[in-house]
Image (cartoon, rainbow, N blue to C red; front, top):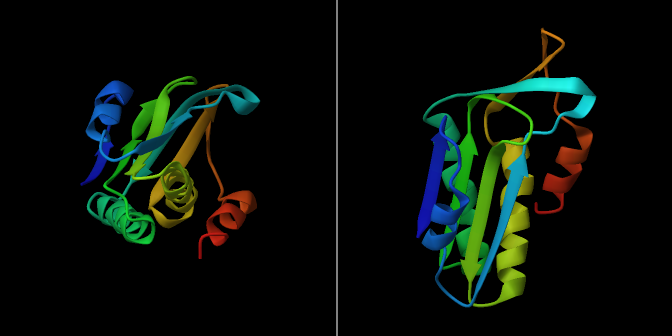
Length: 143
């Protein structure tokens, strides 16, 4: 089972965790909005349709590569504040190593392969967030 959701709503981790309860192991990752450099608001934009398609491709790759019984990606868009959940990834498999690796793959690759644009608001001024070289290196280890 694959679940992909791009939403403006808060991420309900308990509900997402329940949908993964298949197999012998479940691994999840939850990303939070950071207040680095005084960020008051993080605004995420995306390209509807293309974003979901990109996330689905990643989940399908993870399911095939690690023989997962389930994979979930939930990503927020719109304005968010420090401490709020921005992303949830989860993987269920027969064994923990596959679930852990698949979950890491999903978060590493979605940061570079999904069409999201981030804008930070600091002291009332907005600035677009550039892609990070460290994200590219993390994604490259899975290619």
